[in-house]
Image: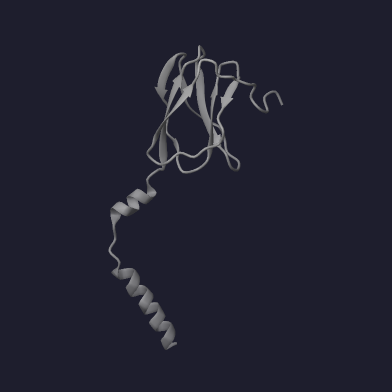
Length: 125
């Protein structure tokens, strides 16, 4: 019984003696995001979206880019693998391989004029 009391007392005093850093907690809870700039060199206006690369998850549209335009879209999750895609009005899309982005980084996606858009997987099923 005495041993249990000593262990509990030691744990309580160890937790109580550590200084609290509110900035550390705020940083820990801050959203982990990255910025994407889309440089659309095609003649097509595009919808830009992403979906999680692992597990179930919905596709999320993060912006639109006019033909021959450069636009910053809504931030994306950082630190986890996602799949970025660009889709034209007819439903054809360009899909990038899965990748992760570092927190607070900015990445430019150049969609070249000769980009090859394909039918959306699962479309029409």
